[in-house]
Image 1: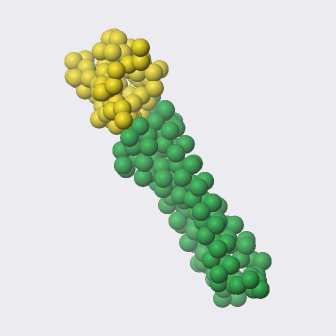
Image 2: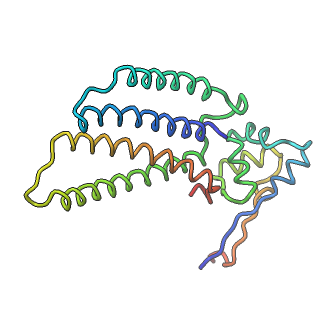
Image 3: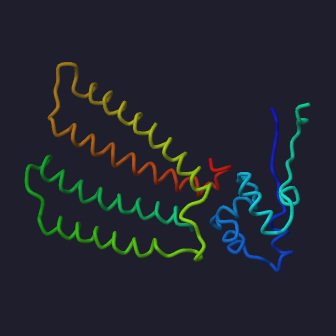
Length: 76
Length: 146
């Protein structure tokens, strides 16, 4: 059984950007604060558009924010 | 608490009040064969409308000016709640028909008003389960909105 997980550095990036609050990030990404909390806690994997919006808020690439961890190798 | 959660709490408590008033009126008329006390029903109805008015004011309040009505995670949660409500409704309907068949027997009959009550109860229950499912998903944290 494939064990996959998406981790993120949102908390670190928020603090690096003048200690941005979850509410400020939520407003910039166009979601509610609860969704940011769930993403930060790894309980919700955002859609691709939302992942891009979060990354653009921090002026970094998506992979600088989200990391895909999987036990299985990608298909050839 | 976001707007979807607030709406769910508001709807759930509104349904409870509405259910209490309706039960009182229906039980008075159908079970006890007497008209409900007009003052009690009226006070209940006024309280219900006052509750709706206050609730609509509270629900307008946002966490921030930019807060959306609902986002993608809220939509997943609401979609799951619709599924839970739909299947619960069918289960409830199946249970009611089986229980009625066992209680009344194959040659028995029920009053027409019982069917009306069952219909109202199913609609009320479906909406209740929908909002309860929304709140449960938020309370559990919702792994990817589940």
